[in-house]
Length: 261
Image 1: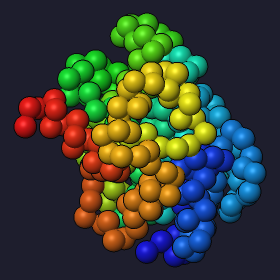
Image 2: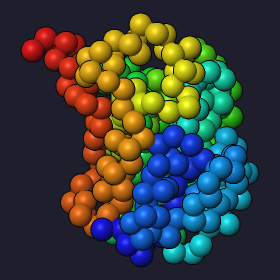
Image 3: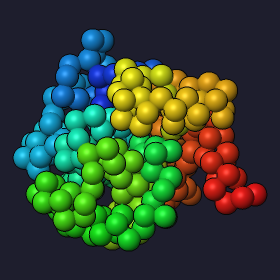
Image 4: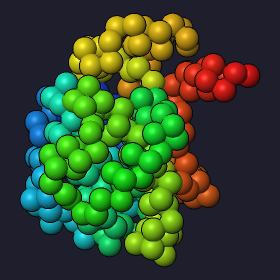
């Protein structure tokens, strides 16, 4: 389904990004693996990049080839470093990269964003989410965070709320829609990756343990990567603007509790 496709995967040095890059290469894709750190086991073409600034994003976009089939936005911070760097990478950097690469993506190509169950509250926090998504370009994130009163401990869930909302919008943005480029998201629950312990520090053991107990186990990178690559493939050609939970049923459980059914 992705044999011969050229796929960019950010966050490819560890966790979900690493497994997605490995699986894509195994399935015959030409992989451009992007990260701040070089992977221990290189896959495809490695490009070092800093997605926390406009300059870093622009340099990466220029270094990538002129024709791409898909972009997988997997890179992300846990929130441990505070709201400003977290929103810079997890949302504004990711959005800027997607928009810059849109002209390089072939007609019928795909953008896949890795969101999170942590973004579940975007509807309840819609006014703030809309205000933050409405900020154009790559802004002064410190100013945006201060103006919208985003606390450091909220950085990670807010970044994922924005990502889910933007995914719905981007699917109908002219730069993507006019060329048939699909924009979708995948929302994992807790996943056994190197930054899970950081999530425990940010979100608290009680929240993480409760989420795991609801579904019986934490996920693994191997659980998430196939869905990301499915959304890159032509088999998903009629899926657009979707946020797919890949969480063992966690979102269904939380929805049942919140909505009282």
